[in-house]
Image (cartoon, rainbow, N blue to C red; front, side, top):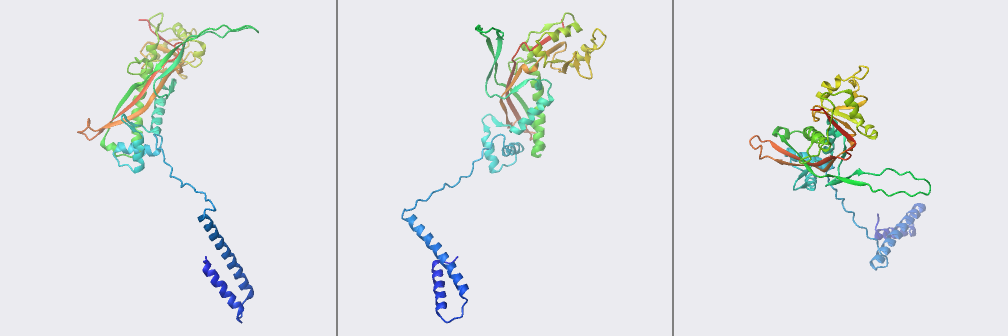
Length: 368
C-alpha cells in the first residue's frame, strides 16, 4: 500500500507526462489517476478520524481482553482420573494433573474418581445378591426418612359432607455415616502397570469386598458399626413344626399385604432351599419349587447365604433404604509394608441403611 507522499509524487509525475510531448496511453493514465485519487481519499479519511479521536470528538468502545477459562478439575474429570492413578503408581504428575489432585484432596484422603466409583458401584450391584434389590441413594450427611406408623384411611363422603381430620403419625428412619473400610495391598510390580490395568484391579478388589459386606449388613447387620439389617429390624415368626411344610410357605406368602407381594422376593440360604424347600410338594404331588424358573409358588427366589439356615425372608426389598452419605476416599501408606516395598491403601466409604416399611417384609424361622 502506497503512502500519501508516494501517491502525491506519482500524481505529479503523471501530470508532467501529460503536459509533455511524450507518447502515453491516455486510458491507462486516467485509470491509474483514479486509483491514486481513491487511495489518497482513504488515507486522508483515516488521518481525519485519528485526529478527531485524539481531540476527544469521537469516543471509542473499549473491549475487554478475553480471559482464559479456568477449568475446574473435579472428581469426574479425566485429568483427575489420570492424576489419581499416576499417584498410586508413583508417577510424576504434569501441571494440570497437580492442580486436579490438589482440588480433590483433603485431610481425610483423596476422592476416588467418579468414573472409577461408578464402575465399583455397578459391579457391586451386578455381583451382589441383596444390594441390587434395595433402594440406593447418594445423599450426603445424615438422612431422616419419614416412616408411616399409623395412618388414617381415605374417607368417602357424599356431596356437601365435610371430611374429618385424622392425624397420621410418623417416625423417622435415621441413616448416619457408618464406616466401611477396606485395606488393599499394592505390590511394587503392580504399581508399575498401566492406568487402565491399575483401575481394573482396584475396581475388582473393592467391589467384591464391599458387595459382601453390604449384603451381609442389609440382611443381619446390627446397626452399630454398619447398616441395620432386615432381621435385626423384624420380629421373626416361627413355623408350626420343626420342618418346613406347604402350609408354612403359604403362611409366609400371605403374611404381607398384596401391594407388597406384587414386587416381593423370597430369600433363603442355599441349604434351606435345596435341603428343605425342594422336598415340599403340593396336593397333587408336584414340587412347589420350580428349578427351571427358580420360583417357589410363582415367587422369585434368591439364594443368599447371609440368611441363616432355617430362615426365610419374603417381601418387597425396595423398602430397604441404603444411603451413601460420602463417596469413597483413599489414603496410602508405605510404612506397614516397608520391608517388601509394597504400598497399602485404605479405602473409606461412609454409608448406612435401614428398613423403611416394616410391613413390607416378613421373616420366618423354623421352630426350635
